[in-house]
Each structure stands twice: as C-alpha cells, then as structure tokens.
Amino acid sequence: MIPTHTPPRPRRGPSASSSGSTAIIGVGILVFLYVSARLFIWTGASSSLIGFSGQKCYHVFGYTRDPMYQRLKCWARETYEQKRANPSDVTFHFKGPVTMQDYRKQVGYQMKMLGEKASQHHHSPLVWEGCDEQEYDYVGSSEEMVSLLQQRHLVDQKECW
Image (cartoon, rainbow, N blue to C red; front, side, top):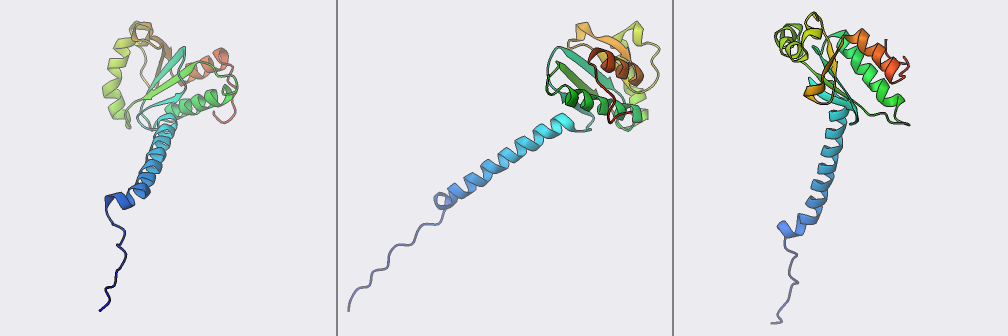
C-alpha cells in the first residue's frame, strides 16, 4: 500500500482573517471620524459649533425649533463660507433646548451670567460674544447679531433672511 500524503490545509482562525478584518476596522474608524467631524461642524443638535477657532466667539442660546435661532445658524454658515478664502477668526457656539418651555426654564442662568445688559431680554435667541467667561458681552437677539455680522465681518445676505 502506498501512503498518500495530503498537503496541510491553511489554518482558519484569527491569524488567517486578521488582515481583512483589520482593513475593515480601519475603514470603519476613518468613516466614523469623518462623519463625527461633519456632524460636529454642521449639525442642528442642541449644542454644536459652526466655523473655526479664533479670536471672536459668539454664543447663541435659544430653543432649536425657533425660526430666529435657525436664522442665525444660516448666518453662521454664510459667515464661514464667505470667509473661507480669507478665514476670519470666528467661532459660533449654538446651545439650547428643543422647546420654548425648556428655553424659558433655562435662560435665566445665561441672563444672570451676562448681567444688567441682558436683564430685559425676553425672547429666543439670546446672543453674546466673548471667548472667555470673564469677557462675555451681551449682543442681543437675531437682529442685532445679523447687523454685527454684516458690519464687523462684512457678511452679505445670500441664502439667509
């Protein structure tokens, strides 16, 4: 009888499939980081940043369903897009609850933080500027913020009202 020899089969296990799964995990991580960065910059979530870091910081506190809050998000995007070729140092911080009732419950803290200037502010959104809590300065509401963006940063009305 002649012995037959069969070649050993390749092992199936963690080492045989690790290069394929490593590539999939790597691609997954890259996709996650890209999506996270895009959401961080452009979302309408209750707390987000739009723009880029720098010298001027603007804070918008309002309820997220408010048309005037959404108007300022549009103006923030316009500021970013119009200044992209020659980036200005502007950062927008959007914060706030979804409903007007929750906004009314929470706005008192921001008004106290801003002091006397904001004491007569009664509607959404509440806007202030300053990158440090010690330098916060009350701006007003959406009308005052749009005027400030047009004058200080020379932003034109293109897509926003």
